[in-house]
Image (tube, rainbow, N blue to C red; front, side):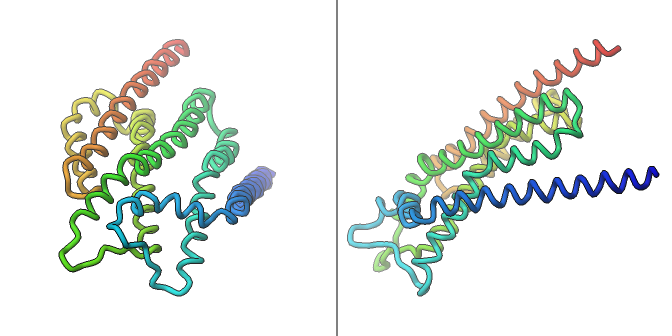
Amino acid sequence: MVAKNHEGTLIGHLIELRSRLLKMIGAIFFVFLSLVYFSDNIYEFIASPLIARLPEGTNMIATDVASPFFTPLKLTIVVALFISIPYVLYQIWGFIAPGLYKHEKKLILPLLVSSSFLFYLGVAFAYYVVFPLVFKFFTSITLSGVQYTTEISSYLNFVLALFVAFGMAFEVPVATILLCWTGITSTESLARKRPYIIVVAFVVGMLLTPPDIISQTLLAVPMCLLFEIGILIARFYERSRKLSNVEVH
């Protein structure tokens, strides 16, 4: 009888998981259908930071016959996924929430909301701050006798990689809080490692941006600030947990 109950519970969880996965896919597909008509405009918007800095008389090129069609379409799919992130996280929350304790729910829900916001913030920071500097740098070092042109699909791969990199880099506060909350480390331990964290931030900035100090600093400094914010919030949760433990005992 117990085995049957466990089996029924497992099947119920699998059915709910399938339902929520279908809702996620459906939401992404709906957003994609809403945007597909504007796929060319979306690509022009994403390409504008480079186009504005191309040498006079040059344009982006397509070396593949199908690139002018598939490249904007690929971008639209990615944009649909980005836009659907809050709904996807909501479905994930709905699936895991019943298995969480009350104090865990108080932590996880704000983290899911803040992770979406921070990811969007990182993407916006990359587009409005980093891209102009990056493309100004790249277009200024063109070799003599070499015409600077960029293939549209290569450009898309490059900017998507930067979007994901900066979006993930801006998740530093969430990662910091989770590390402390799960007991892997503590705020005191992270605070003592602050000099190493700063070095790592500048190394990451060096790897993700062109080799100039301005671009590296534009990524490293926000990461360091977000790390400090993560420590402050983690300390608040640590104090709340200690108070809860005192009340229980």
